[in-house]
Image 1 (tube, rainbow, N blue to C red):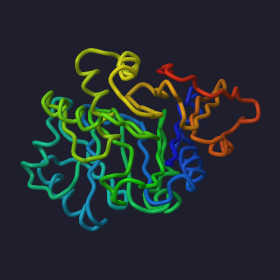
Image 2 (cartoon, one colour):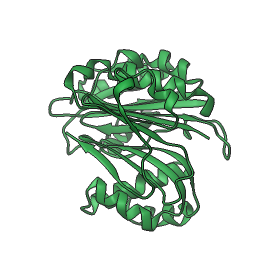
Image 3 (tube, one colour):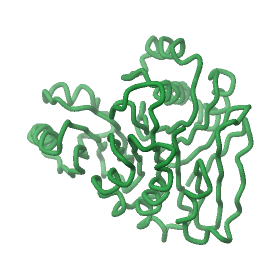
Image 4 (cartoon, rainbow, N blue to C red):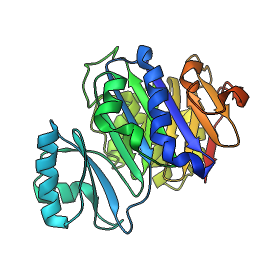
Length: 294
């Protein structure tokens, strides 16, 4: 099952509403994924710094651990329930090394100039409330609701997955060659922390782009290298991409207006969007890369 959503704002006047739009769409996908949910939102950059999104066991735990990092970096901390967003250093900083040096007992769920990533176990409506997602602004964002049919219900298994700065992916489907790919990516120096096939897909795109491919080129190459059935929605610092496998058995629908482009697993998730009655609605074609950038 699982439900995926995404919004890319063409019109800057919508940016203040991004969190609310993504949240409303996410809640509509509850029936497709009631056990965990997450979003990645691309907001204002931290000037001269990289944002680290950290996750702890409890709000008190992540606040205490992020406080240790603040003592080292003198950065401001923004707390969102079990997550903390901390801008640190500059773009050359090694986030994992910095966390290890500070002795933090937290998970690093995302890094980037603009991306903030939040995910937890729980119903989508509860996740939206806990993280205050409706109040967040940005240019684009993606979200996922999970139904764990092949693994335990854990936060580690929740989407989105991020394996590179300002890069993240949500996935509906199943890969058949992810174990072989995971080994190859490990040898190439791409860090994969879970057994989830979706993280392998994210790592594959990170590796391709690290080797010089654009997102569009990496998604095109994925058609040859990834076996199985899948629908991907991918975020980067400046863009938003969609890809379905050549069979395209997973449901997908898109809406485009002069103000936005949106993706959802089902049309009902698009209904909260402004001007949806006049939007151009279409089903993304199999094996075709769609990408919007600003």
